[in-house]
Image 1 (cartoon, rainbow, N blue to C red):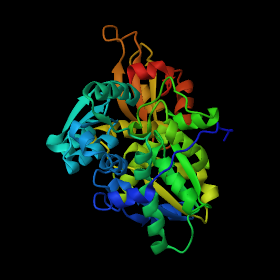
Image 2: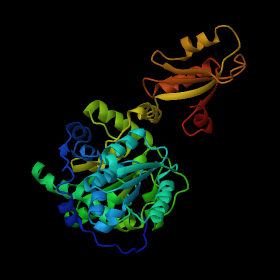
Image 3: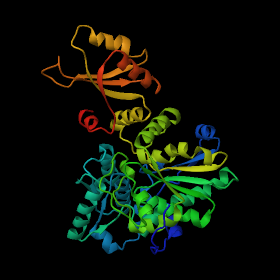
Amino acid sequence: MSEVKNINKPALDIEGAVARLKSVVTHTPLQYNANLSRKYQCSVYLKREDLQIVRSYKLRGAYNMMHQLSPELLAKGVVCASAGNHAQGFAYSCQKLGVKGVVFMPIPSPQQKVNQTKMFGDVFVEVVLVGDTFDDTAIAAKAYTIEHGMTFIPPFDHTAIISGQATVGVEILDDIKTLTTDPIDYIFLPVGGGGLSAGVGTYFKQKSQNTKVIGLEPEGAPSMFWALKSGEPVELENIDKFVDGASVKRVGDITFSFCKDALDDMHLVPEGKICTTILQMYNEEAMVVEPAGAMSIAALDDYAEQIKGKTIVCIVSGGNNDIARMQEIKERSLLYEGLKYYFLIRFAQRPGSLKEFVNKVLGPNDDITRFEYVQKHNKEAGPALVGLELRSKKDHETLINNMKKYQINYNEINKDDNIYGYLI
């Protein structure tokens, strides 16, 4: 990573956070995973924060900060902005402390996370949907906070939040001693605004200096990646919001001050690869993980050689995955794995052209998943949108060769095309 600017780091109170959270959070399990260990020829342990009370680690930071507010400030109420998981941890904290809270969430937030936030907050929390991204939502939330004289509980950029998230690392190092005598060689953890990576990374640098701390971001939202490249936080113009738990335009100044020293590597994970991992963990392990929670496992393929024979910890940061998103997750996975393609095809205007396409161009295992004429009123001349799902990635080459052999007039649409975004 490039040289970064010298930014002073404030002090963290990690041990104090452990004491404050002891009776509130679940000490989540650190589990050996036999399938992943066999696949990568190493020892893989999963830190199951998807099994936390609110199904993510975010409760730790929110409660730790709120617990330290004076009775006078708590009486005025608290506000947060969140894509979902911080909102749920904040809401649960409001309910436990009996404090009025207002949660601002982006309009595209999964409905499951909105509902869960209301459930955890009960009568103590109001949810307001505003903005398209976390950053838009945060602006509205902070304005509301000032207007009503309340206290803002940030999702990541505060020492009390970072200290709370660091307790994940405390539990990992406590529990690993009961599972193996080997030291932890690598820890993989997701990075959004940087609270978890700042806290856990810093704690590991203090207590387990030889552990390589690997931060992970989705390819479509590389905020920390570019912050480290630039030597300071930068605001990205556009981000892919799919990995909603780890997609911010700008990481925090405070979290960056810790992460620049705590992270040994910053790696980007394709969204499609994350989707494949979500499906694999569900089918093979009966685990429901959200996109941000799957990143630590999804990245292992890219580190397969380095981690061979090593002891690895992957933080599964959350399991708040809306079932309504599964079709999109499957679609992104298939596109990434090279098993699904879309074409605009102009069939020859003669009898039997469509039958010829099905019988001669398509392979025995190719499946038509979508067929739609693009021009509704002139089907004879207009192209058809055809979606195909293949059994194997290598079948794509055969399909294209058959298209050319039978002189099919086609345009292939991939996930980066403007046409794909418009039609699919």
